[in-house]
Image (cartoon, rainbow, N blue to C red; front, side):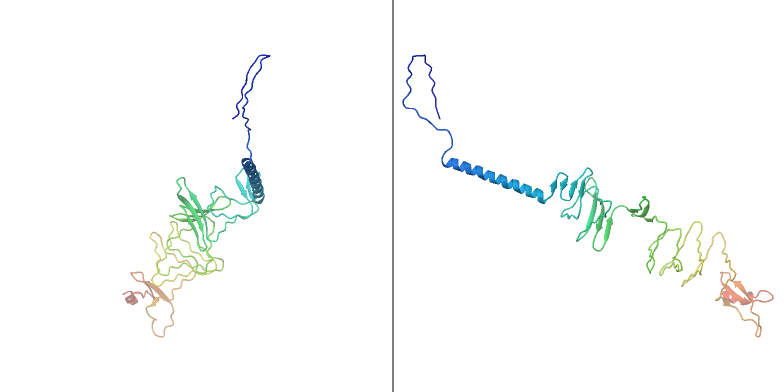
Length: 291
């Protein structure tokens, strides 16, 4: 430490200075100075290397004021061009493609889209796997371009909102429960078959059931009985010819008779049989068929 002395004196006064004074030099000298310069040089080299690496990273990653590479930051969100691979889940409010291209989601295993509520619980899930497409939600609905529901599924029912539902499979359509529809029709020049292999087939309507064949016949086959029942009305067979080819015949008439006229007889239980027509009714003669 340098120590200085200041002495005031008047003019003509002789001042005597001390003989032994020590002078100290201020600064860093020797090996300390060389180490300091070396450390500053090392810091300068690190700074230059970091600056070069930063510029290289910015150039390789295509950083720009608008974004990074194919990723652009816009007022509406993020815009990503080209193909991208996400290694972790992607959280977004809305994902859509450009106007002139389609949106493709691809994965080697499956593609899963989840919707969560405020508590973090999954409220809806769409999973596209290699063998199955699975939808988990309270209701699944497909709409047209104008917002009209085309297909709706929930726990209670399945609703088809199109004007026509067409089944093109060779085996037709199999329904385990009831089907409600205003019209069942086959393709042109094709047969319409309503079949129940092991159970009964029932067609109910509050205002009537209409069965019509424009260019063919209507055929009803059953291993057991076919019942036509009307509670308040009547059964009408309106045709030019009504054929009952397998009715039981009571008799063939007297031998040598060429008469081929018959009358239809009805048993109390509704059974029909034929009897040769005579001058008067002959049903009583063959009433044993009703037994």
